[in-house]
Length: 357
Length: 80
Image (tube, rainbow over all chains, first blue to last red):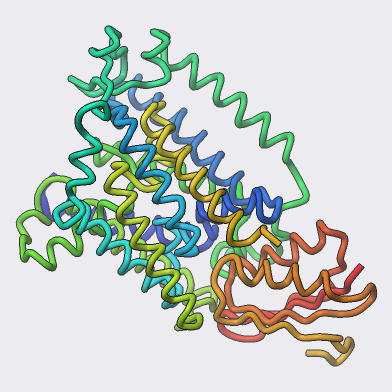
C-alpha cells in the first residue's frame, strides 16, 4: 500500500471505529472499574466478546496464511510498571485511551484535556525527559525474556523472527488448544452473567443504530470485526490508540512530517483522528454532541490522568487497546501481564477514589 | 416533565465525568426515604443508560427516563 492510501485507510477505519465506540459507549476504564464500583458487567461483556471474536479471527487468518501473528515481547518489568501507571491514569482521566478519544468527539472538554495530557506524556516518555525510564526498564534484570532465553520453539503462526512468549509456545502446544480453552471460558462466563443488563432497545432499525446506545453484544462483535479487518489489511498489528497520538504530537513539535508518512505512525495517527471524527458523527446524529466541561478541579484531575496514561503506555509498550484488545487475542504473555497490571492499577485507584467511606 | 410525578429531590450532575453521575446518584439514593422520588439530571450518555440499569438492579423503580435535549436526560427514580 502506498503512504497516501494507507493514511486514507487508517482514517476510514478510524471513523468506523469511532462510530462504534460512541454507539457502544465502549470504554475499558468503565468496563473494569464498574465491576468493583457498581457490580456492573455490561461493558466487560462487550470487551470479552471483542477479545473472543478477535482471538478466533486472528488465529483463523494466521492459519490461512493471510497474516502473521505479531505478539508483543515479554518485556516484563516495563509492562508491570507501565501497565500499573496506565491503570491509575485511566481512572483519574475518566476514560481509557479509546474512551478518552471517542469522548473528545462527543464534545467533552474534560476528555480533551486528558487527551492533551496523554499526548504530552507519550512524547516526554518516548523522546523527552522521561526516556531514561524506558531504557532502564529495558536493560539489566528487566531485559525482555525471549523464547531463545528459555530454549523454546516460537511455534507456528508467528511473524518471521518473532521471539515473543505466548501462552502457546511456553507450553510447547498448538495455539488452537488455548484458543479453544479461552473461548469456552469466555462463553461460559457470558452465559453465567447473562440477562438483566441489556439496554432495552426499541424502535426501528435505523433508530436502534443511530439514536440508541447499542447492546453490548453488537458492540463486542463490531469491534472484534474492525480489529480483524485492521490486522488483515494493515498486516503488522491490530488496533492501537496511544501510538497514534504520540505520532500526532511528535510530528507537530518536531516538524518531522516524513516520519508521519512512513512506517506505522501514519496508520495509527490517522486512525485516532478518524476515531474522533467518527465519534463526533455518531454523537451528532444521536443528539448527544454537546460542548461541556466539568469544574476546574476535575479538569486538573483528568489532565494528570491523561499524562499518566501517556507515560504508562510508552513504558509498557501499549495502552489498553494495544494490550488487552489486540495483544491478548494473540496470546501474548507480555500483553496479558501488561493488561493485568492496567486492571490492577484501575482497581486500586477506583477503590481509593470511589469506595472508601 | 413532572406533570404526573413531583420529585422529592433533584440531583443535577450535568457536566460531571465518568463515573461521578452514578456514584453521586447512589449516595443520594441512600440518603433518601422509601417512596420518595429522585430526579437525576445528567448529560453523560453512558450514565444515562447505566443509572437506570443499576438502580433497577438495586430494587428501585425507574418511573421515567426522558431525553430533554441534546445530550440531556432526566431520570425519575422511586426509592424502594
